[in-house]
Length: 405
Image 1 (cartoon, rainbow, N blue to C red):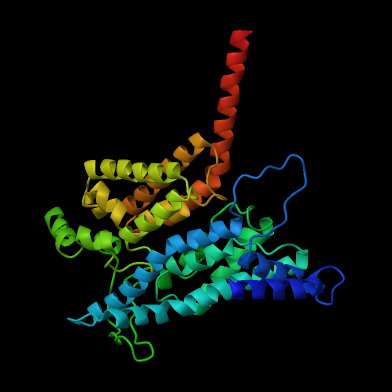
Image 2: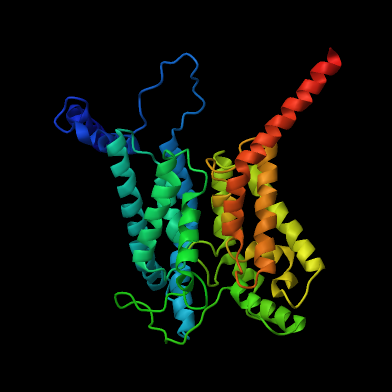
């Protein structure tokens, strides 16, 4: 408490330098962003129409979302090390060495995402003389979590810069973007550099880092479960054996499978979901409807299973466990800026995400993951969904009014 008081007094002492007329007034937005990150603002609007809705400000909300992502991040560190050791034929898996290896693998990617993204946001805030927005607190950690661990750093920097500038800032900054910024970063990487974002060699870290880990041979392949299934050319029985022996449902639930850094563990995603739902930050309507949509489409695909589309042999539950489906349902589809906002609209929006995600991954063998495109499609349609819901409600009330008249 004493240290916090000293820090508060220090900030109060230097604050006049950053206010209009001070010698550092050009850096006011930088100081404001740092101050409000540490302390809840003590200013409120004086407008009569403004009401206090919650004691949390948006920075605190973003921090809670980051905390909800921590289980996925920590498990991603372990799994990155585990996959490297496993690919090298190891029989022992030292916990702390695996964690250290995963930490060293993801740290540069987190730093690149934050330095590039926050750097652009700071520059834009300074140029516009606006407050620094806090949305990138979450976006900066989401980007490394949804990308393969072998994504080159320069590609990550280019994609992050593109997404922040053309998806967020040109629309006005946080709260005005139509599409999820982290997902557009991944989409940019996927379409601009497909060889580095898909295939059998990008989801497992193949080299040693500062003496930790193993250097894997150039011919090593480590496809994700969905990638293995999409490229499978055998019969149904062999596919089911592959699913049961090589890709166990338990490993898929825990997350001990190749995949994007933070998306593999359904268990850790559920822990994060529990925190978001407990704090009321994420919409349970969207989460529930995404799951229902995925189960429904998975059941339909399984009902009309065909060797032409191997993923159709997967059970509806398998569709939820593999790939980025669960992560998209909890952390991507529920983005309050880009999702539908009406109650009924959230159900429609979530169903659309779940159905389209399974539809794409099942009936497009060349792209065995559909969660990213499903959420982006739903983002584009969210305003239309809300508009239709509102107009339907208006029409219903008008008919009721005319009937009473």
